Length: 409
Ligand code: UDP
Image 1: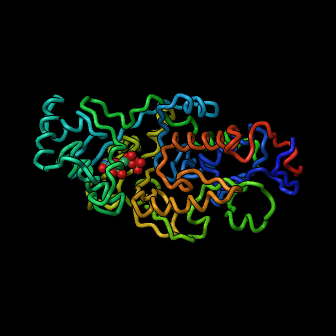
Image 2: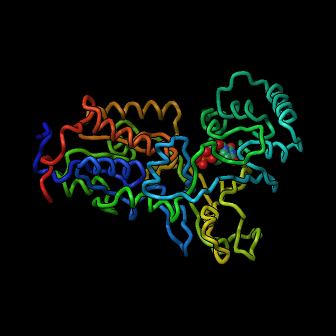
Image 3: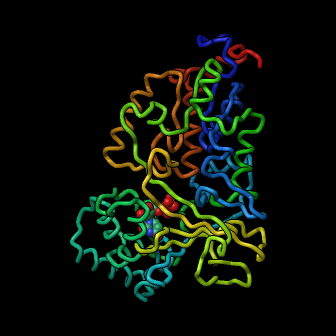
C-alpha cells in the first residue's frame, strides 16, 4: 500500500537527531516496524548524557551520575531486552560542616542531626520547627522544604546545595524540585523508592548499542550542517536537541543550568584531602557524596567504580567533581529551568512545532523538562505509539507499511 506521503527521492523515513535515550528508543521502535531510519549526533559518541567512557575498566559517567530506576515493570522489561542490571542500589552521603549525613531524609538523617531514635521524636522536632517558621501553605522551594523536614535539615542539607545547583535563592525556586526526594520516618537510606533499579553490566553504552544495532549512525554531525549537505534525504525528523535552537531562537532563548565536570585520578585533579582508604585506592567509599555547604564550590563528587561493585577494583580509581554554573548558549544545556517565563516560552515554541507535520520533538531538550531515564524511555515509546499505532494522530499507521516509501540506498 502506498502512503499519501510517498516521496520516492527520500532515502529515509526518519532522521533522528540525537543518539541519546529518547532518539535511540524511537529509532529502535521505527526500525522494528519496518521504517527506514538514520541517526545523527553532533557528539563523537552515541548515548547522549548517559554515555560511559571506559577508563581502565571503570565506566565513567561522563555527563554526571546516572542510576537507572523505575516503578514501571514494562520499562524494566524493555531495557532488560538489551542489557542486564547489576543490582546496584543507590545511596547518597551528604557532607556539611565536616559532618556526614544520610540522604534522602530518613531516620538515619534525623538521628545524625538530633540524636533521636524514634519516628515520634523526629516528627515532634520537625513539627516544632514548621510551627516556628509559620509556614501554612508552601509556595516555593524553601517553604516546601521546611514544611517537609524543618529548618535544621533545610539549613544544613538543602539550602546551600540547592542554591549552588540552581544559582538562585530557594525562595525563587518551585517547590516541585524538592518533592523529587523521598522523606521517610524509617531507617532506610535507599535514594529511590522504585522497585526496579541498577546499572547495566558493562555500562550504559551497551543499552544504546542494542537499541541502535543495525541502524546507520553518523557521529560528529550537527543537524544544520547535515541537512544542508543532504537536503532531501528524509521525510520526517525526530529532533531531540533544544527546541528553541531548532527554530533559531525566533521567540527568544530558553534557559538552562550548566554543569562542569572535573574528572580524573584524585591526585591528578589536585585534590589535597585525605583519601578515605588510600590503601585500596578508594577515595570516598561510596559512589556519590554531596557537599551541601554553600562555600564548597562543587555540588558533589562521584567515584565511578562504586557503581560497578561486581568488578572488584582496589588498584585504581577515578572521581568526578560536579560544578553547577550559569549557562550560555555556547554551553551544553543540562537542567531546564522550568519557571513561569521559560514554561510560557516553551509553550509558544510548541505551537510553532505543531505547524510542522514533518517534525517531532522529544527528549529532555525537545520537551524542555527534567526526565529520569525511565521517563525518557516512556516518552519515546508513547511518541512511537502515537506516530505509528494510532491512525488518527500519526503521519502513518501500521496499515501503511513503509516498503514503497523509500528508495533503496
Ligand atoms: N537536594 C538537596 N540536597 C541534597 C540533594 C538534593 O537539597 O543533598 C535537592 C536539590 O534541590 C536538588 C533536588 O533535591 O535540586 C533534587 O535532587 P536530585 O538528587 O534528584 O538531583 P539530580 O541528581 O537529579 O540533579
